[in-house]
Length: 315
Ligand code: HH2
Image (cartoon, rainbow, N blue to C red):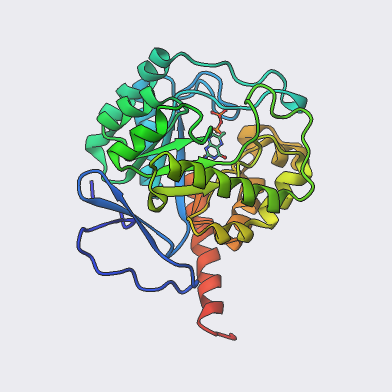
């Protein structure tokens, strides 16, 4: 398979500054590859190897089906993939009981056969969506490139692992435990508080040996936030750039969209694209999505318009 444009050749000179004016980051990946962030927003395709994910649970539990799905997302233009074997759907409030916790061996049993099959097919960055250091370690050994940890180092072994292996990590904002985080939510100013708490997470990560240059931050849309707070965060996303790290946004198919459109999770494409537009507008470097083909087409038009504006065209 051909090398994807976002995985740079080693030694390639510094990325030309973007027509959109955002800075570039180059995150090292295993095997002399890099993930280049900043010249245009990247599309991260979601591969859920779970029976119970909120929008596609059970569809790709079989390793061969998960592999087909992953290859399809790459063919549709995904810049990178995020493979997860534990649903992290929060519980409490309107979300009901939330996702069931998955034991480490079960998470590995779901995830590793897919990674093992997928790795030889692509040089695209492969992320593993896990809260467990032991699962992340096994996934890195099977060729995963980065860790997406929605608990932001909740497992005390995660920081030593990523620091030792020198791999990038996504640190996501949330408060409290998944099972209860949708209860008793209070923010006075959601954007300012999420920014400040992500700053604290970055500082704590640095104290535990995680290089700041290897981090991405994520506002945690849908994780312990009300409807209005999710909307406000997307609208105020650009404030997160003050943290000086690339921003990843996962809004695809989430409940806040369904509450506005009345659609079930698998029919939330239009709303997900609206959320992606706000993520792009807010300067997100990565959007995590289920509907890759449509998001890639959407980005083509969005970027063309943005770059026409940046070039000073007046039509
Ligand atoms: N959202 C989900 C899972 N992982 N990771 C990051 N960094 N940001 C997110 O917003 C995020 C995430 C939830 O979406 P999904 O994987 O589709 O559902 P489930 O957790 O039910 O498997």
